[in-house]
Every structure is written in structure tokens, then in C-alpha cells.
Length: 108
Image (cartoon, rainbow, N blue to C red; front, side, top):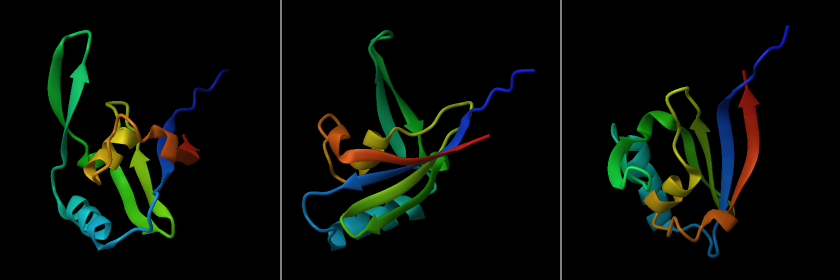
């Protein structure tokens, strides 16, 4: 009998060039206090963009000593992308992936 496991949570670390400041802390508080956090995803195949609420996928988001750590929930319906979280914090999501490291994956 073959069991299939799938991820349910993924923990990431975004390393920042400069030490986290009050503006970053304010952005994090704003995201966590929001009921809805909307991002726009482009679908090149459909040639259109759609808005998605990623707030239900954000389990944890906090300042670390040299950046930001966050945990995203993975559901069968989808998840948030790490670059989308970085974008919400003011970083360019097209040039930030090299600073995002996956730290841990929880499977079920």
C-alpha cells in the first residue's frame, strides 16, 4: 500500500540586506491584522490576471534578526507564494527569490 504525503506547512526565511526596521515591522503588523490580503497573479496561458486573497495561507510572519521568517499553509486549493509575501513587505517579487530560503516543510 503506497501512502501519499503532501505538504501542509512550509517555513521560509527572507534575508534582508539591511537590518529590519520599524517600517518592516509596521508592514508585518498590517498584514497580520488584515482579514483579506489580496495579490494579483498573472496567468500567461490565460493572458489575464486574477486577484487572490492569500491571508488564509499566512500562518506566521515575524521579524527575525537578519530578515523575516514566515510560515505558509498549503491547502489542496493552493497557497501563497514566498515572493508574494516579500512583495507585500515592499520587495520586488521578480528579483527577491535568491534571498528566500525554505527552512522546513511539514508533511501529512
